[in-house]
Image (cartoon, rainbow, N blue to C red; front, side, top):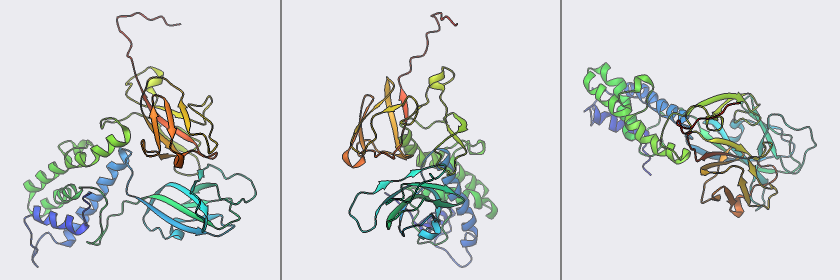
Length: 346
């Protein structure tokens, strides 16, 4: 991994500007660098979001007293909260394995139990029914994209130094009389199609491997549809955007995944979720590749489970428990219709 600090990005920026080492009269000082760096940083994270790549993922822990019904990220000491990934719990002071908690639209009307079990995210708070025991709670979350201002801050994006430095100079160089050099730096950073919203240059080099790793396909725009969902990452139900299902309806491009769930009727992922069963079957044929999620958290093939055809086998530490929901994006073999063969429509 090559994680640069903000100071290293600034030094590379000044080298591009041929203004290194710095002098008291240097035109590319901190006041010029900071706003340009801020924009470069935010552009990088914006493309992460557009291409479904997680931002910097961090973990925070907190001891939750009995009867606690709400917690904010600030209560846990999180000052850079972007969005939650998952919550899990265990009895405080125990050696038991953490239990995945279930996000719900509305908390159930029930008595407090030993564990929290469920949570609802709304109004920038996590809400619980409450537990009767002290709980050791883990919150995994995406770090917000607030640009750092301290030169010692490490930017946890591998090999991002060239993009950040070139984009920052591309935005600020022209104001200092380096118009041609700034244009060249911007071209290196984002390519020639950036004004049309197309990713290219060093930014494409940066996010391309991450996109392919998560989607198992070459980087490409994926069609989307809007709808209402029971389990949304954004908390109290509501409107969400998800991958479209052209592959199952017969229209348009077929290079899109089919969405399957253990909760659908009939279930798209078949198997008893009881904490003991490790084998599940994807209820469709012609499976090419799978991206599997457990309570919205992507599982890693070879570390959490194995895949043989349409059969999923979880490793012992990752076996789903009764409160878990399994979902999957499944790419299947697609045989386009032969235009020379007539079809009959009813």
